[in-house]
Figure (tube, rainbow over the protein chains, first blue to last red):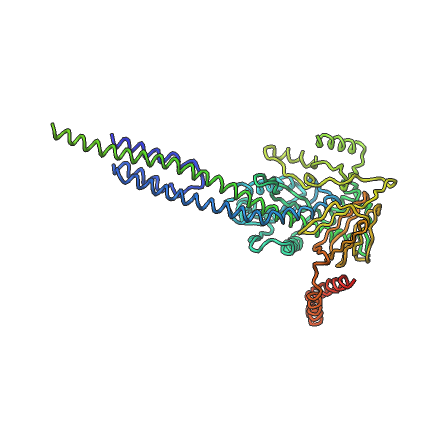
Length: 324
Length: 201
C-alpha cells in the first residue's frame, strides 16, 4: 500500500514539470525520483522534492534579476529611440513609402537581437522577411538578405543560406550611436547591389506591444524612375534642387542619408523591443517558477505526511502483532 | 474610417488616370493598398507588417499658391533630438550655395547643407544652432524640414576647444599622405572654421 502511494507520488512529480518550457534541468531529476519510488525508499523522496524546490527558487531569482536588468536597459534606450523618431518623418513626407514598388533587385535587411530569451520578436522578424522574400521573387526579380544579429542569422541560414549577402553581429557591444550606424549603412550600400532596400524590424510601441514594421528605401535610380513614370513620386519634380550639383548626385546623397537615418531609428526601436520582450518573457518565467514552487511545496508536505503515516502504521502494526 | 476614406481617394485617382499624391500633406492613407493586397494573397495567415506611412505625423495640407500661410512650420531633426512643429517667421539655413533664408510661401526645394549656423527668427527671438551638414526640404505648404547629423545650440560650444581642434586638424591636413586622410582632415578643418566664424559672430 505504501509502495502504491509512492508510485502515485512519483507520477505526480512528472505532471507539473512538463508544462512550463524554460525549466529543462528537471528532466533528469524526474527519472531519479521515479526510480527511487519504485525501489521503495521512503524518507529520501522528501530530499528530492526539496532539491527541486531549491533549484526552482534559484531560477526564480535569476529571472527576476534578468527582468530588472532588462527594465533598466530599456529605460536608458527608450528616450533615445523616441528622440530618433522624428528623423525619418521628413523623408517619408518627401519620398513617401512604397512597399509595393516593383524592382529587380530587392535587399531585405533583417534586424534582430544577438542574445536570446527575448520572446518571439526574432521569429516574427524572420517570418516577415521570408514573406517579403516570397513576395519579391519572381521570374525577373530577386531578393537577397542582409542580416543583423545572431538570432535571425541562425534561423535564416537554415534554409536561405545562398541568399544571404552580409551578416553583421555584435551590434550592441558599444552603445548605439549614429556614427556607428552610418558606417554600417555605408558598408551595406557599398557591398550590396540594390534597387530597393526593405528594412524589417520591430517597432516599439509600448512595453508590451512590439509591431513588426517594414520600411522601404529606394535607390536613386529607382526614385528617378518612379518620379518620371508619374507614379507615387510624381510630385518630386516640383522640388527645385538648390546648389550646383546635378539632380542625380543630390538624389544619391539623399537616398544614402535616408537609409542611414531609417537604419538608426530601426536599430534603436529593435533594441527597445528586445529589452521589452525580454522583460515580459522573464516576468512570465518567474511567475511560472512561483506557481511551480507552490505546487512543489504541496507535494513536499504530502510526501512528508505520507512517510510519517507509514512509519506510524508500521510501528502500530508491529506493536499489535506482538500483543497478539 | 480613415482606411475607407483613403481607399475612396485612391480609387478616384486611379479612375482619373493620374496618381498624384502629396506625401507632404495630410491626405496620406494609413497604408499602401497594393502592398496589403499582394501580402494577403501570398500570406493570408500572417499579419502584414506596418509601414512608416502608418506612423507619420499629420502635416498641414498642401495649400494653393493664393493661400500662403503666415508662419513657417519648422521641423529640426537630428539623430539625437527633434524640435518639431514650431511656427516661426523665418529660418536661415547654411546651404552649400550660401546662407539661404526661408520665409513662408517659399517654393518647394531640396538643398544640401554645409557646416554652419542655422538661425531661427521667431517674432523677436533669435535662436542659433550649429549644424554639421544635412539636408533641408521645403514643401509647398510652408513646412520646412531640416535634417542635420548634429545640431547643437551655439551657447553649448566651447571656444577654447574649437581653437585647439582647429590647430590639430590643420596639422593633420598638412601632414596627410593618402587621399582618405586628406579628405578626413579637410572635413575637420571645414567644420571647425565654420564653428569658429559662428562663434565670433
